[in-house]
Length: 470
Ligand SMILES: Nc1ncnc2c1ncn2[C@@H]1O[C@H](COP(=O)(O)OP(=O)(O)OP(=O)(O)O)[C@@H](O)[C@H]1O
Ligand SMILES: [Mg+2]
Image 1 (cartoon, rainbow, N blue to C red):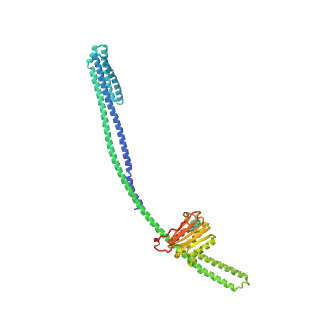
Image 2 (cartoon, rainbow, N blue to C red):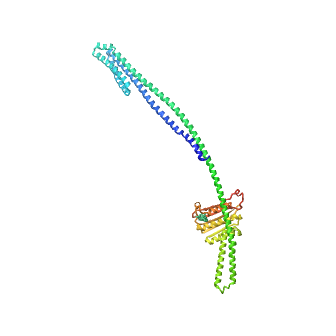
Image 3 (spheres, protein in one colour):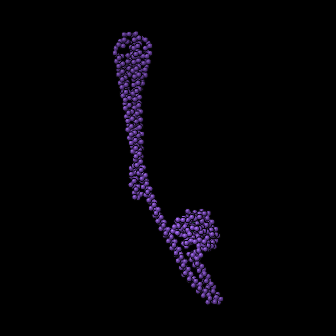
């Protein structure tokens, strides 16, 4: 299954399960809502209950004060003793205070206010009746106050007061009962709410766990697919690199063969032609009297010089195409010749430290070409005054170094279009060796390689040391 297909199958499942977060949020909001509603309702209920209790208390106090006033009034009427009037006055004052208090309590409740108005009227009547009888007693109008006392008016008033007072108390009790019921309802609502929200929370948590699990398995699958894809690409790159490397080797070989063929052709064909021409000139020279015809002698001399230059040029080209010194004299001598000629041509001082080493022919050519390209680069870019070329043999490998004291460069910034250094590396690595280029702008350059003495199949068993780096 490809990465895309895997993602297409799994993503909707993951999205479906992504409901858990909104669910958890919703549950939290519902919980807060239930709590707030319950709190407000409970507060209302508590206020209602407090109101009911205050009403009950005030009505009871009012009744008590009325009884106190009646007791004081009766005491005075029966004894004529003024001391009874003091509790009477106090009770009447208290009645007024309680009436004011109750009026305030019923301000916002029209039904209670109606009942309170009836109570208040009865109290006024009772107070007026008591006040009248006291006044008549003070005036000495015995018959009149006794008459009032003996009628049922006072009793009726008192019963009316009690009736309305009890009605108000019953209403206040009803308020208290309703408040209690409201609180109980709020508590029940809170219980149900908390239980529901807990259940939703647990469900959301369960869904979250499943979501996390699903995400993890999607990630694992993706990772496995990525790893497979990476491995495939890696092996593809390895394969391509091997093919390219083989191709480059082949081209290198073909190039060397071509150069060898060209060198042979030049040597055999052009060399034979030039030698034949030189022999002909020599023959002509011996037959012509150059003293008699100085002009012809001059021409022949010029022809001989031209032929000699041609032969020298042919030798140089052949040498450049395929260093004959390498096959004839060996690596050390070929490098010696190469550096000497280069020093003469470029006017740079070259120091050599060359040990005789036993390398396979292909590796010898690699070393020769490497030194050749390094010297060409020094001539082209380095502006060096001194160059050191060294070849040292070790039990398992050969180390080759070309060091200059020139301008140096940044090896990481080499243009991909230049092939000298990369070709050098390719040659060395094809011969089983390693190459290192160490340089910094202003600090000269060191091209250093190590090559195995023998190119054996098991060469990897004894790894080569790293080439010198500065
Ligand atoms: N000894 C050196 N001193 C200073 N710069 C160098 C030296 N050797 C190489 N370089 C720098 O490294 C670059 C790459 O060198 P390389 O031999 O790969 O390519 P090139 O000489 O420019 O072209 P090519 O060799 O393909 O004809 C050069 O362009 C040069 O800037
Ligand atoms: Mg170059």
